[in-house]
Amino acid sequence: MNEFIDASVFLGMHSEEENIRIKCKNFFVKRMKKEIIMSFETIGECDHIIWGFSRLHQDSYYPFMDRLHTIMKIKRIPYGLKEVNLMSIDKNLQNYKPGLNLALSITHRGVFYTLNQKLISSSIDNIKTIPDEEVELMFPKDLEKYYEESLILKLSVFDF
Image (cartoon, rainbow, N blue to C red; front, side, top):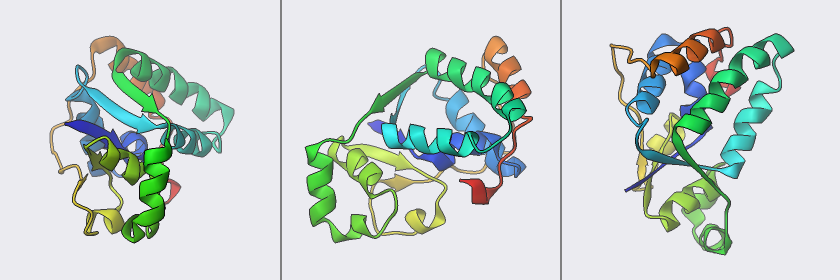
């Protein structure tokens, strides 16, 4: 089954809250050899948030993020007419900010992972959250080094 993520899952790897950071990081570590899907909008949303930080923070964050996107099978896809049409007729999807993201996951028969509590408690069937984990897993050695350096950037829940 296709797995889609929103910005909360991707940016959660840099959360100032350790439980969120660990579970989001582990989500990616466990899928290093699998494919996950992000919409172009989600990538732009992540960049928009990161660009609000200092050059020092960006220069620490992007070497990790760039390598993760290169090493891991992260498929980036645009919205199409199927998603726009579904969004226009499904009133439930219209109630949520990432409505097109949700439509994308539905039209591609996927699961949509998020930390957004409003979405998690919705009646939309394909939404999942990431369970808490106590043990932090490690990326492959070279990538882990860049991840640790990127942690100079910490995000509050309100950032994403």
